[in-house]
Image 1 (cartoon, helix red, strand yellow):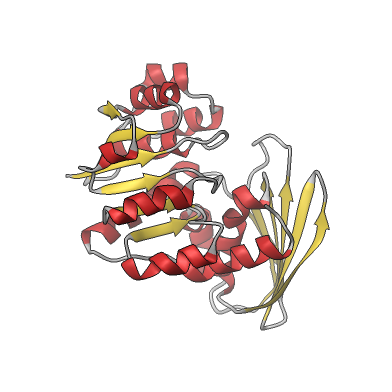
Image 2 (cartoon, one colour):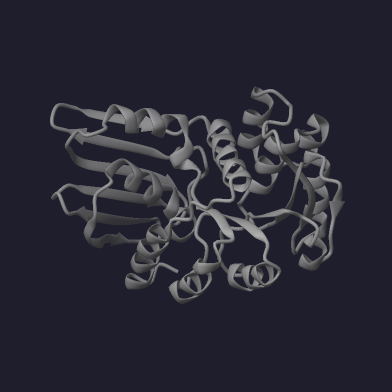
Amino acid sequence: MINLGIIGYNKGNGHPISFSSIINGYDENNLKKYCDYPAIIKYLIKNKNKKHIKYFNVTKIFSNNKIISKKISKISKIDKVVNNINQLNDCDLILLLRDDLRENDKILKILLRKNKKIFVDKQISNSMKFINSIKKKKLILLSGSAVPFSNEIKKFKKKFKNKQIEWIKSYCPNTWLRYGRHLLDPIMLIKRSGVKNFKITQKKSYQDVIILEFNDNSYAKMVFKKNVNFNLKISIKLKNINKVETLIIKDHFSMFKNMLKKLEKLYLTSKNNNNIRLSKLFLDITKKYELF
């Protein structure tokens, strides 16, 4: 069995609950009592309550808020709530499940000194210098968004394989800094074409609009709706020569499960699939338009 430690939590990110519950199973009473995310409760209960990742077991959790850590541990049957990162030393793999980037560099430096294998939720760091300094270690097995692992994206990608795409339009709740990778990652997976330019066409209190221009003269528009509730789903609209098609990411459970199965395979085969190119593109856009 591969023992995992979780590092969280930041406000608005329910991944410590969903990831650990998919791996360990969950206690339904505690899920309903302590989980503040109705969508997570809904998709966990909709699927079988069991261990979905064969060789993974979350045994420890650490966060800056011990009360929240205890609630998550009760929900997803995590054995121990620890007081500091050093107490994760006996874990084989660490899931860094924060998406605010504020403490990532500090946390990763500690873990890398200990030669820990790591998964990072969404963006690794807001410093390309830091990312370049750690990539040779190859200890970050996987990072980025789970959206490319969704069943919806898989079907979309297969359907439009080798077909000319004129444009992509995508929409997402939250800010570019928090959720940028949720649109950037699947778009780059679908397009598989180099980006020759990018620009921001709108930077408002209620939304940011970013355009990617590709080498084949197609483009992708990314719209980030700020200050909206999470009933707004991630959606992607695509036009090829013949027609326009839209997909909406609905099956979050399978999306996370597929990503965790990929992580399990990478661990078991001693490989990594950490896409530095996407991290760089994300930071180039972030810094040019001061989207911190």
